Image: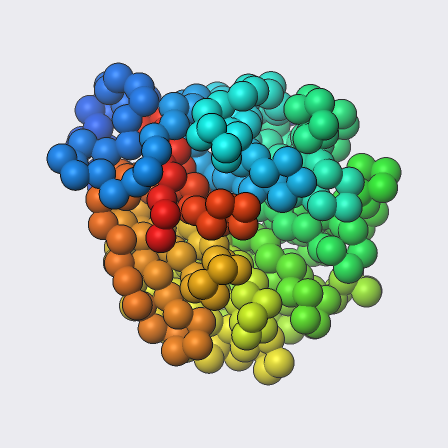
Length: 356
């Protein structure tokens, strides 16, 4: 399909804004977005806090844990979205066991435990690749409306559907995992593109929460969608923040945690009132966020600080800051089989494994 670069410009700006400040550290010049370093590398800091360093393909941006196979799936975005692969990592060996070809510019992934499949958003291709974890092959490609640039994806375990955020067309698509077809479109209001990005399903109230980064003058919101009607029920405005990016649901206290990528903080949303319950200061450029079902902590990657913040969900305060975990940490996933964190190192073409 034809990709509309003009419509995609505001979503691409998210990446540029997050990464520009540390380009020089990695020897990136002009159009070269690949680091001039040998692989694998997780950090140049003398003391590395991780337990393993795994080489993947260029510019790994997102990661998801497959609880059926105890494997991690990594979206390799590639230089200027030129990547088209997903790396599969075994958590028993911390090694890549398969590299899968998907659509152009994979940006986000979500595991579907109902079908044991992984859904991958292809930002530059306007498609969603469906991967069987049995064969580690693409079994279906879902084509989205012309001009789409899917930027986030989340699984709804209530209806066995995938919700896909489209940062270009200001929409959220609903895909049935039974047929792998588009069954509904939810339009996000606003004359200025709100750039829907992160997606999280709340199993407590069966609602889907979608972040809006608010670039180009838009507001910093989280849209709340009922999965029963596929309509927006409310919009949560995040005051004192900018660039609502990734989001995760905490089933322990029924709250949503939002990493605000251009503010050094995380917003906490109470799902009973759909209001902001707390705003927690972390380090610079928080990007990825994950819930640890073992400790009931929330872990946040701080892209600009080369660190990970640990937030207690009982106090909504930072209880630990893990330093020297990686450089350019972006995506993060909790592995409930090993109780470890897997973190993508965007500029270093690698994944760090951390035992928190």
